[in-house]
Length: 329
Image (cartoon, rainbow, N blue to C red; front, side):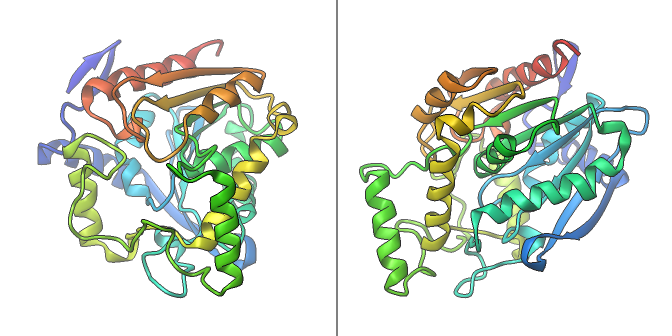
């Protein structure tokens, strides 16, 4: 354990079996799981971890191709800070099933709007059934989950007290190709019946570990999660379909409209990563300029996943999160 600002974080999580067991044993004791009916009658899987003596809770909205297990360490830290935790697996991810007709590790979605509607159903039917959290509910949303959460905030008021957006998908990084060009190509390929093909450069889940191409520079955390996926094939996800890209691009266009950003009245802590290759961080700056109450922090040395980074990055990152959650409460 490493102590910082009176908090204990696990040193080199994933290196020692006993440290992982501490986290897993606690989560196993506290876990309650279930499913609810999302849009289009999809069975959406969720887990909740309730701190009985507390009246505050945080909802985690995960990113593209992920499952709940990637968040076990940060769930553990939230629980230690007295937050009950709710997390669902988005449609097409993990235990919420695969929507692709061509590959069982491909990410597909009927409409990006369904992700947002599923989140609202989760909040109304599962999370807020516990009246303790009505005025003390928070959101931690990462990457694709950040896009889902932002669209939700733009259209729904009064749900969350504060929000943390980590490397939100405000614009997919299409590298040397322009956003407009990629959208046009995607629309053309869908018209040609190629919508189920993988996005250029993306593939099915690969069993060989590839730290360099991942969203973290931490070999231990990445290795632990990859090993878990190798042992649980049903939870593996790789790249997305061209149709998924079209839906995601449409969603980012919507959420970045000035009039939509201006509708958000919830305080936001927005993390952008110094070495993010997955999303275009310029749009984090653009969002900050328009948002009413948004603190923007660049996480130095971090790739896309600040919550999954090396200790020297993660500890300061977590301290900033808990400071933000404590302020004015």
